[in-house]
Amino acid sequence: MRKLPALLTALLLTTTVFSQQKNPRLANASREDKNGWIYVHLEGSPGDIGFQNGFLLCAEIDDLIRAMKLVLPHESGKDWAFYREFVKRAFWDKIDKEYQDEITGITEGLKLKGYHYDVYDLVVMNGYIELSQYYVPWLAEKKHPGSAAANNKAPGNCSAFIATGSYTADGQIAMGHNNWTDYVYGERWNIIADIVPQTGNRLFMDMMPGFIHSGDDFVITSSGILITETTITQFKGFDEKAIPEFVRARKAAQYSNSIDDFIQIMTTGDNGGYANDWLVGDTKTNEIARLELGLKNHPVWRTKDGIYTGSNFPLDAKLIKEETTFDPADSTNSPNSRRRRWEQLASDYKGKLDAETGKTIEGDSYNELTKAKEASRCVIAGRIDTDPKGCPEWDWGPYFPGGTVQGKVTTAALAKDLKFWAHMGNPNGDDFLASPFFTAHPEYQWESRYLHDMKAQPWTLFTAKK
Image (cartoon, rainbow, N blue to C red):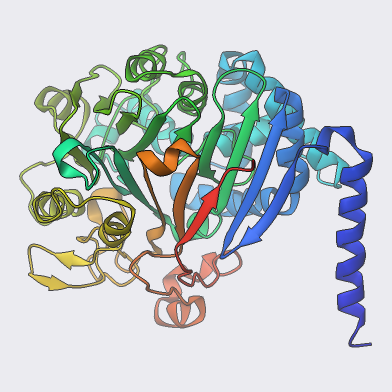
């Protein structure tokens, strides 16, 4: 009897392999699980890429949607049906046909594995950040002027850098990013996607299952474009008639061959959703740029010798005044505390930035304000679940189960061969253990069905399939 589970597992694996061999849409697709990550190779027409995504990641997509259905009403006050109705009315016809086909393909892959979701479920999943954290507050402000502006909590997640010239060890571009988010989502942000479309660039990126974009965002492309970002804290504004952010982000990665291309695609049809400071590099020219993408304002900084960092602090005075409620003078908030640390790290590591120092930086836990290492909202690899203040500017209460969930680093030399280092779990090496957390903080017990342990895994080098 003890052998039965192993036999059943072997049977399921054999059935899956047999299904792939029999189905021509899966001929070029593959999946590998490694150190907390799931690597998938997706290749072919838009419909086939989607089908492979849905088939290979079916259980993970189902699990993510179930988790979202639990979390979204708690955090936004709106249920899944509300979001489905909106994307059906306002998003679907603004999605390029190529990506409509890819999303449809995902539903077909899911169906073959016994899961029945439609395209609107997948659009809600792909656009959940801009929907719940930008559209919903905008809608509240529209219905009750002054309400959203007075309590604007658009979150700021992630810590990132991009550097070139005298700031890096070899004079070429280096880029790093760690993802801050709710832990219930973060444990599921564990897909490494190698996407080979029929047109445009090959994409190598992290993402959540069922996504057509990176989402957090860390992307390297076959055209030598490197892309990452951090969100703009307490941003306000949304245009429901414009193009969804997740569509523009995917299109910009797939079709940009220069920094100018990226800026043009991201600013065309800008809906204000998921407002970010985008950090972009072009390995062909060794130039890097920072695009601060608001709804009304799109300032850009560019250099071939420098560093741009992000920890959710906006820089442009006009954008801050017109489009946020962020206080750049508050030295104790998370974005400004981390900004201070970035300034020190940029100085300390000037001329030394590469993959190894990038890993160190993305796992940094030193607070420049207290002059001590700590697990709090104020460090590069921050934790809110251990912070008694929480993160008020994001409406994360004391000990909220959120913070740094993974990290990635690459260089121009690695990106040339479509490679990057990835770390699942907090890059500072801390584990999150669910059971003692819920015992200590029963106010978050409602998440216990979908929030599990997140243990720090080793840094792992991923390479796109040859």
